[in-house]
Each structure stands twice: as structure tokens, then as C-alpha cells.
Length: 344
Image (cartoon, rainbow, N blue to C red; front, side):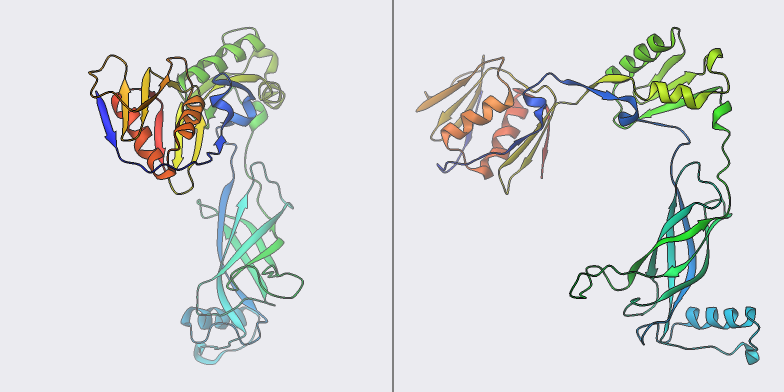
């Protein structure tokens, strides 16, 4: 079986990244780097606020900003007759967002991002007024306030969008994130990259470390661990032990091609079945298939050859980067390439 492809002779340089093509497929990593503990994650906070003190760059006629200013003045004891709308181009309505780390406690400080929701042209020089920040359960977990920073360089030019800014350490946590983690009787580990082999190895290593059958794999990405009796009430110490266990991680055989630059990125143990590449009108031939006319010049690829060796052979033939995609797709089609192929 042969596949004919047209190409132009040109010497190219391929950048090979991903050492998986040159070393065994498994590499040792700590459990803490390849998995997360269920429930130990950030929570997103969001709130609506007002930035004041702008130099005429605020909202021009946004109704929501006017209403917010009226309510603010009323709460501050200023009598606004008939709830008249207050308009000022020195104020802007914004959405404030923050990430609440796991196990946050009252008094911890958070960085805040503020984004204009009206027609303000810039938040430069503004001050975010007191803004409650709520989580998905609608409870207020933090309160934000402070000067808005856009991030500028020495010459004063802004590096970011002028309608988005940061309030560094601008929020204070006002409500603890409830968690009785130390007394947990079991917990669940979730792999970042689910893999049956890696999960099975983790179970064996954890059970070996704990001296019993305490870990079980539910699937390729989930491992349940029962807290041993000698760690009862000390789940933190248990996880500190387990998260440093070294696991040989299996990586999927995958090739990523960038047709524009001719870059080849490889990961995992990638095998090439016997195949021949000819110079001229390109013919890719898998061993055992019916042969056509004899090629002008053939570079034979042995069965134990890696993709790295194949790329070197293609370089020797002077294959153009735009044809790399066609070559690898053809190899994949005939079954000679034992890897997942992705084209950018």
C-alpha cells in the first residue's frame, strides 16, 4: 500500500520538544503534582461596586451607576429628594472578582480584579468603595476596598486595558471557609490526567506506604483513601506523607505538529512500525503492503525506531514543513504511527 504526496525539496530544522521521545514513557512525580484532594480548591467570589475619584473618565449616563450613587448617599445620611438620579463622570460601576483560597480564615487578605461594566474610558486613579464579595452560596466571604492599579511602566504608559484594574490585597476575608479536614475519615484524590496505569501505581504505592489496603481506585482518575486508625484525627499529617510519594506517571503517546513553523512536539513512548520513505514523488510504504513502482531513493525506518529518528530521516530527505502534517497523517492512516496526532 503506497500513498503519493507532492512536495518541494527544502532543508528544514525541526524543534523537538518533549523528552518522552528519548526516555522511557514513565517519569517519577510527586502525588501532590499530579493529583488534587477533593474539596481542597479555590472558590470564586464576585461583587458589584463603585470606583470613585476618576478624572472625568467614568460612566457618562449609565443608569445603574446613578442609582448606586443615590443609594450610597442615602445610606451615608445625605437626603436625595425623590431618589433623584446622581450623575458623575468621576464614578464608574464595576464588577469585582477574587479567588478565595482553601482553608482561608478571617483576616486573610486577597487581591481583587475590578472590571468596568459601563462606558467608562479609564479606571486610572480611582478608589474602589466598600464592596461585599459573595460566593456561589450567596454568602459574603470578603469585603473589598482600596485604590485601583492599572499597572504602568516607568514612562507612565499603561500596559493593560484601562477599564480593568487590580486592588492589591484589597479585600479582607470576613467569613471562615468551613472545613473540619483534620478529622476526616476518608478523602478522594483526583488525577489531573486520568490514566489507569498511573492510578493503579498510586494505589500500590499508597498501600505500601501505609502498610495495608487503604487506597482503592474507583476509575482511571479517582482514588479513595481511608484514613488508618493511627492517623485518626491527623489527616493533615497523613496527606503530608502521601503527597510526597513518588509515582512513575504514564504519558500518552502524542505528537503535536505546527505546520506553520515546522515544529514537532512529542510526548510518551512513540513507536513507528516498519515503513519506507522515498525521495521525489513521496511514497510512504508499510512493510508487507503491495509495492508499486520502485522509488528513486528510499530511507528505511526500522521497527524499533522512534519518531525522533523518523524526523531526522525526513530532514535528510529535505521535507518541507507544510508536508510534515500530510506525512504523519498518512503514517497514522496506514497504521504505522502508534500515537495520537494533533495539528495546530
